[in-house]
Length: 171
Image (cartoon, rainbow, N blue to C red):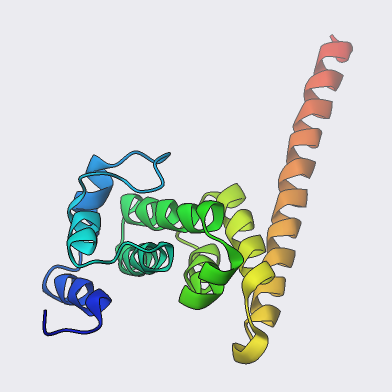
């Protein structure tokens, strides 16, 4: 009751247990906009964090802490939170909570190996970011690198197909 910034209570939870988001992830489904019955979202609800902006702030916070983890599971949780942000939030909410920042961080994290998801997050971040921090340059460079990797991957697939075709006709 004494704390005016209710999101700070959730930050304290993460200070005590930086992996508190793992409880959330193990009990929620990816297709739900607000996973019911999960500890962090339930706590947020009890604190009165129920508006769309406040729920988006909770997702950003969870994604930030999940990205500090070292496993694929941690990065998948971060992606699930980012995916909800880019799929379910309005432009006003995205700008208010600066959701593009956490999406940009995950998009540029080389530990996150889902190439298509990284492209989506990078695109989202480019669409919504402010160039106050000079982030546009970094995101455009990341986009170019991903395009180059995609082209290389496509070239390898075409090469394999041509090689298989030649082998078939050579027989």
